[in-house]
Length: 446
Ligand SMILES: [Zn+2]
Image (cartoon, rainbow, N blue to C red; front, side, top):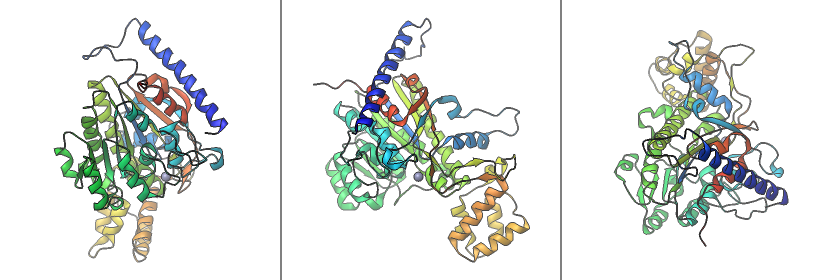
């Protein structure tokens, strides 16, 4: 930890300590304490659920509001994000990496309270490991888990569970999970966990699940569930299965059996991937399933008022713009009608038969003459060009804009509910979020 980071870390610890004391005295002095069927909520949580919408900058939550808006009513309905908003967070990485973070540096900040370079998996700028909130939780007897839609050894979950000088060392990260002792690991990534490695997990007492239908039958013990070769399918192509919300519900069920409490990380990983692809239809599908997962946790908190949920993003992706080309318009009726991802539609279009009829059916709107010419030309150039043509067609009709295929440095939002959720109000840095969460863990026994 450099002097500057040490200062920031200490400062945020002090600040969060003050805020914590303030929140405790507020709840102790208040005339009308919040009562629930289960009694008063404690001022310090027993359980913590951290939810990260990867790449979910503010434009994504606004876009999701209009995407979900019921056009038959005058009002624009609030979303779960509107309901739970409490503050904002800066995301910049360590000095050496400038102002625009990647998922690894940001997850390192959120998991440890220390800024590092882009690519770092919970190591500092000198490549030395930094203890994560998951490790601290384990040391205090809490259960830990991750539920994500990427491979479980992707940057965000990896920074919570492990340490490595590079996010790209997928195989090393997978092997390192053997020693994390995490109780629940759900997501994709079969490719990185060969049978020989899975045997070692089983020898440590883990149940291994390779098929999503098996998830239902697990009701206790440690589990590693890998439901795809790499990432899970796009939510828009897999609507009925609600994988992230089901993994979240199962993780809560398993982890809450630990009497001392738990820390769970849930990531809507593929919001970022759709953002990199500048793919609005797929991004809204991922947002919808991430929102579903948040609502699962919200419901859990209604029944377990000793649980804190903090939701944020690690950074913004794609520079998504609600409206483009000097036109004051964003047409969500186009987006609501789309039945599959541009990936899927392009694959389908390359098959024989009346491809244009199938594309039109999947899009839910009729391409104009110009569109058809462009699609026909793109179709002859193969899958990738066809996918891009479909994305551009959707952007034109909905008037969606993008500024980059990478990340941007804009601040992200923070959403929270449950005990001590007021700690997260106002502006903070992503390292502050970690410092506050860590301050809420039970005190370590000596
Ligand atoms: Zn990204």
